[in-house]
Image (cartoon, rainbow, N blue to C red; front, top):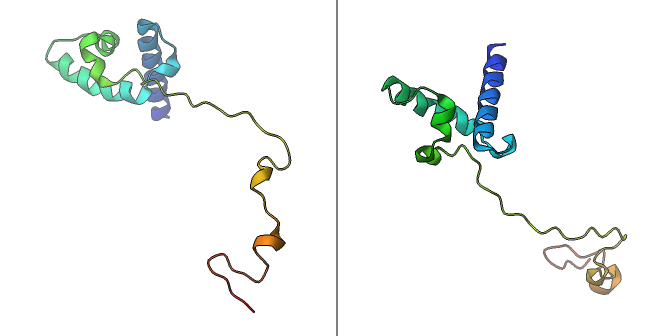
Length: 109
């Protein structure tokens, strides 16, 4: 049960970071927010930081990777619903291979 409470708090912190950066939550890496908490705790012990949200969103801490890198979008080909989408590549079984031949080599019976 404790892990569930921790996860809820972590998601809430990631949501606060997303709101501070004016980004959707999908662009924030929850794992990197978790890993950034270690760095925050070190600076908190040194007395250099007091708020985890401002620490994780600070410009000098961009190397923590809290914001996900944009992914390259692949161009999707239109879906072809015909029964034989690439019909020009099909061959007749009796013209090129017979049922007596193996895939790796020709075996005559």
